[in-house]
Image (tube, rainbow, N blue to C red):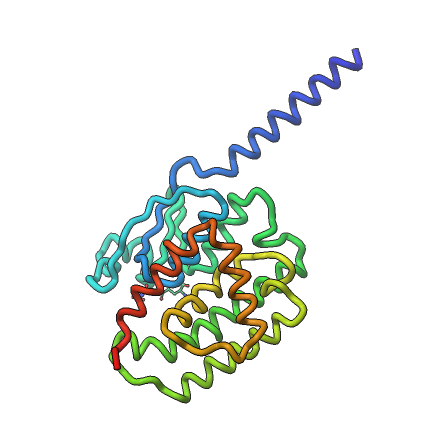
Length: 242
Ligand SMILES: N[C@@H](CCC(=O)N[C@@H](CS)C(=O)NCC(=O)O)C(=O)O
């Protein structure tokens, strides 16, 4: 009698596990409205690769206004890429997309820990990236890339200050939020890849330089070259040649 009960329990455990692992994959490929050089699109694409997710990539050329059509605006009134459509669930803001993908489809929580304090550190880094690092990168390079303006020393100093803070966060840590790669590294690395492609000298920040090399290596199997470096090179080609 006991063995029958054990068998029933085993069957329940196995079918539950199967259901759980099935629910880890989307029923159809997630649509991503994107453009190859866009840094926030690149971070989403690399996280999808790390998670083993197929993306249905929909090129949305913001230079040709493809993000301003009534259909696109109905989906995302803020008209930004990346925009994700997971079987009708629409989301934009790359860092929110990264968290969602790991929460919904991650096999474990290493990329975005469930432990409240560890998660809080990842969130702090993501917010630092959105509000400070990427924002200061944009402050320096947006006018140069899209308006042909000259290098602005004041904006460069602000970016350098942000890199200095990142350097301090990395004291005694291999990755930006701890000992392993998280979505915060993948969100931030795209900015560093652009800086490298643009010839920005960040070598004074030793921890940042070492972390950047470590992160490149970790992402090499997940499209670092063909997604991130290739995109950054397209952007670099927009820079005014002296
Ligand atoms: N914070 C947003 C930034 C998105 C963003 O500004 N994307 C740019 C392309 S890199 C864009 O869509 N620009 C067109 C627009 O804002 O109308 C994110 O991380 O997703």
